[in-house]
Length: 255
Image (cartoon, rainbow, N blue to C red; front, side, top):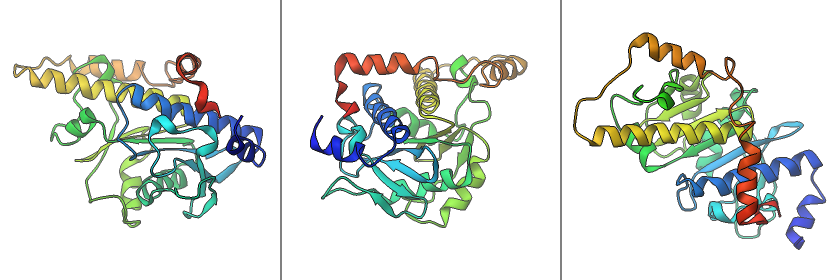
């Protein structure tokens, strides 16, 4: 255990440390599945027991470098409450988008935003996400938000929240993808399958042939059957396997 780990762990609760470990794991998993963007983008998680406190990555770290002790604590007003670093702080764009969702949705514990290649491609299509695959049909109620430029204008937050509504996933037009879920495992799982749905659509449309769509009643039935309240919360069963995957490769995210 290094000095940074010891210093951070000594000033946070066990519940917060556990959240930090899981959030660091989520960061490490994203590049493994092709969903990171150099030092950009963010995953935030609410600090257990502190509704107005969030954990966010230091701006300048790659996702592969994130550890439990490297995460920065901020509040919903954007104030930095705990920063283990001398030369890194949080990114304003991350605060604008993520704090808006956390402030408006008490049910949301984790928010993930990506600029993946497939996500950006689908965000630029007028048709949006199409129900071409079973995976895509899971997102039958996906939300959309029009592009307003780089997310540094706090006035955009109200419009973004209005467009998100009570959905757990949203396509940011000409920008990327966003998910907002009740915990870190569900957020990672939701983003993973949204990304897979976008990749499959881009591949299918690139074949330059007619697309086949299931019947409307089948699309609706599939969306219902894949709804978390119908089936089970996504990610809960899968998360331990994801942690084992990381532990086999590099356990330093736990530091």
